[in-house]
Length: 357
View (cartoon, rainbow, N blue to C red):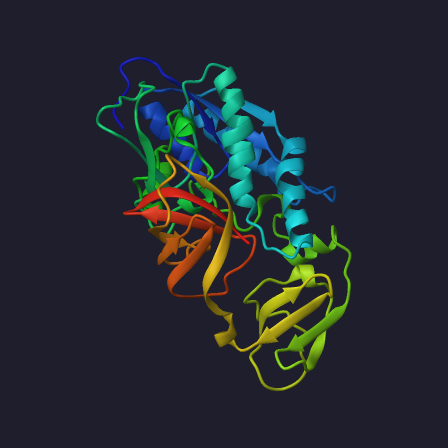
């Protein structure tokens, strides 16, 4: 990214973590007019397990060191409606959702993006590990630039999986400053910039539940209901406390007191409140159905072959997507889970994605 000869206003989403702080620092160094923005998320009523207050303080301290303006935008109500409630609905339906995908769509590249544009920002920026490519015919300020998203230079930290709902028209107004760096390089730069959060640990799990286990959080929102754990041949192996709390491929946490195994969750019957378990070999499948498909750029002609990622950090698999949403994998995949995202790539470029039915 070249240094700017004239001031260009960029609103940076600062979460309080090292990645977004370095993103802001890099943009300021390159001559952009940078404003840091902390988005207050929803948090439970029992003391705010998300620790958003500490995150906001960390973001504010980083902004102070960088000498940039800092704003706090309260998106807690919208976050609860669009992300938290969505997640709970999905679990109640027996699926295992990915709230990060919805957070990016509705909050970061929805509310934050729109509000920043209304305040006359030229761009927004985030600390996502993903690379933005503009073709040679489009300059930074060209509305005619062709934009695409590429897998990050640090493949272990790549976050393109969570960004498949974005559209090219949004990308034209986005910057991802750390996508060309490895995580250790980002931490090294943070220390060099004098950022107080240079050694802050990466966030784990879903922000708004903080250190709380997902099952424990769900129990505060979905009433426990005991049901049977049944082996494939119909034998009852144990009792569970709620089919909603378990996901396909899960092994630990099953109350099975007989010998044999190990046993894995193979499928769930929500209406009958039954969990079916079996050996690991029963987890593999080659065909699935994808819904709510969205393409970053133009929709490709189908059927077509893509590289597909079926969960975060899973390897890419060759697959053919048909017009009706059916996806056929070249080789079987383990524990394909309803509610997760199927994300399509070609030669390292993020093309789009959808939700596994």
